[in-house]
Length: 240
Image (tube, one colour):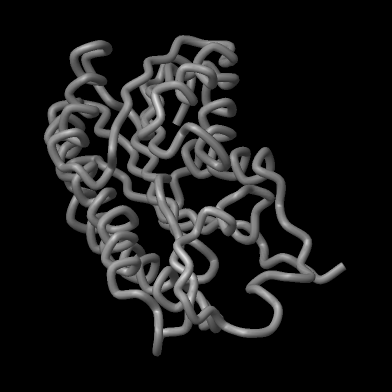
């Protein structure tokens, strides 16, 4: 897909991979809608983008707010070309003792958030002759079993299944669903995870690995939007 003047929604756009992705698409000539809970952070990002943008503060676990986000994009620009479901959070702790409320919260954000957004945007994309692209940000951990992050990984396993099924279901409507797998990335994602009272002992997951930069990850997401594969991701990080 040619990205110039395309309408792109990025959730979780106030920091980390989401912010870098918004920058990458804006630099490529797209018009970017920035969604996250913090209006202040979103406006700071918007002011620094080279292209046109729109800030829509959104709590992705709130179905009404997610539908309002898609409606705002459609009202402003008349279409939505690309939806990037990036907002997410981790929960850290062994399966035996992970806080069930933490697990419930990340299921709502990591799984129901993308589901709400897909259900809201599909009617818009179906009405467009050119269809649209949905990129769901999963994780390389959805292909592994790493102690201490089983709850988080399971939400990404589920997102993968939802995405692959949706890709087949929506193909007749020219809506292309893509799964993207970031690896260990240089962000505060791990620090912002919900931690149980009995975390796994030893070194934290990913310690000793060389993380990818957010710019490298955003560039790869840009590639996914342009080439539209069923799935694409970052290489597994190597120990230094």
